Image (cartoon, rainbow, N blue to C red; front, side):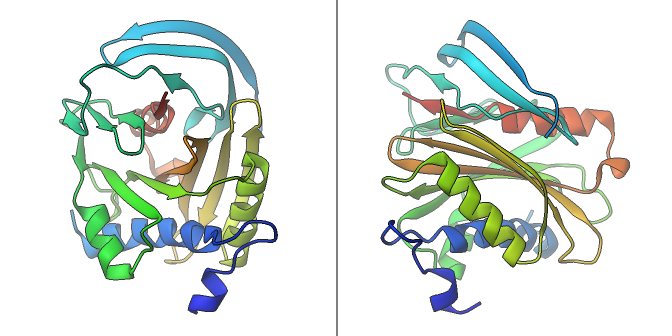
Length: 249
């Protein structure tokens, strides 16, 4: 893919490499995996939760049914905790530079890595407006495939969630992936795209959750083999991880 074809900004948005990011996050997932370096039903709920990571406000959460289960479309904020710092603490990763948190079910089946994303960025020449701060990888590969979740953060300025998701969907289709479903929640600036990827012969599901806040776009991508090859426990784990993403406010 040429530099010109991957970095042209969309109309009305200067210096916005959405096409690069959409393709890049998928390529990064597969490069990691194969190098061995390691809608439907909608629901609205309301809740107020005090957890070990702070005060979490769930006000009008929109969800959509996906092959891994109920997936949050809405962006759910969590209150900033005094003294919090960037890093892995037990089964939660917090990033104070980009203001987000994400968690995984346990450290027996999952491992978080803060290094590999930055190594991949250097290898691929990723622009400094983009960061890949965390990978969460299963310790149990399936047919040489490692289910994983990664977070990409991009400085985007002013663009709506509808525009951002639509651009990502268009570019995924242009790159050869099959978009199974997509949805947005403009009230909270969240979105979800479900994709089937045939780039390596065998189909691979990828679930991209989108969030916008703090002048940034967050793309949380979960990758797995098709649902018929997954245990219910692994599906539940992937849903838990992608749903745990929170924007710190």
